[in-house]
Image (tube, rainbow over all chains, first blue to last red; front, top):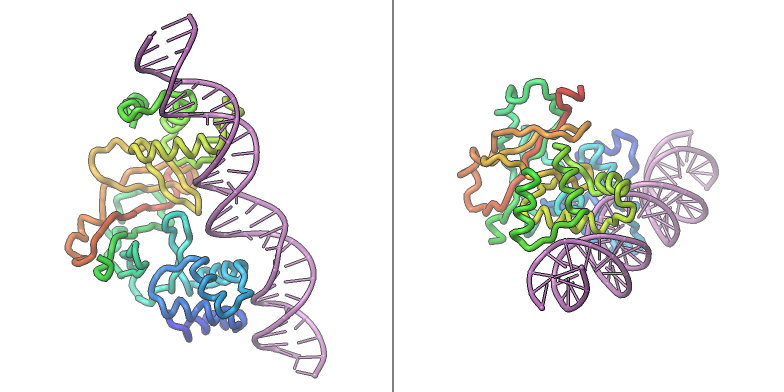
Length: 136
Length: 136
DNA sequence: TTCTAATTAAGAATCATTACGATTTACATT
DNA sequence: AATGTAAATCGTAATGATTCTTAATTAGAA
């Protein structure tokens, strides 16, 4: 997901263009990795000393609900990153050191179609954790 | 995992047999599903009105570290259940209504052996969520 | 420019989880 | 059975992430 596309989605849904939203989205655009609400706040308070948690969380929730960001849970904290643009469904390798991700094209659900008859599948989670080549 | 096996592991590691541990383990033995710390506390305070969070969390941590319980994160809360006895690696379908689980024999990592060269894989998570046949 | 609804700031409240000092308990030893 | 001691527990306070509340500010339309 790139910045213009994100703004297009926001405008379509009647959300206003504010400086806080701009900076949040810019931070996610620059860094291709998962960030926590605290990560964001720490960086943003340099430019906006009055930035509050509420603003961060409210906008993160908005962005996730619009499909601009995706989130996952790592060691008890919510982490957010830009929604991938890939048009095909995929999963992620997540580096536990730097937080960068690598797309994994395989989806285990492809092989599970008929393995769970009578079970109504709502969603699934498949993530691989470890160290990326840069962090070893 | 059954009760005698759990106690065997605890004794081997020098842990004492207390009434609180007994009740916690009994609750997990009866119910083949994920429970939160609060779930446990609510039930246990009927028998032990003085049961404290500290006791619950401390024992849960002990049991997980000894491989008696396993845990996962569901909607922001830690959930615990008895470690499966299956001798082969597997994953879980988790019912979002009743919390019961069903073992899924397939592991996507089997197919990913060489797909991530140079990536040092530490662990992985694969879970399927939905409604079990009983809850539809 | 003015108006209005959306957005934000500031801080309090909430929820899950962890920590701490004092007390109690399991159990090995006498 | 009584005793000693480390482990376990209790009651409560602290912490950290997240959400809520109210008043003030701001973006974008009229």
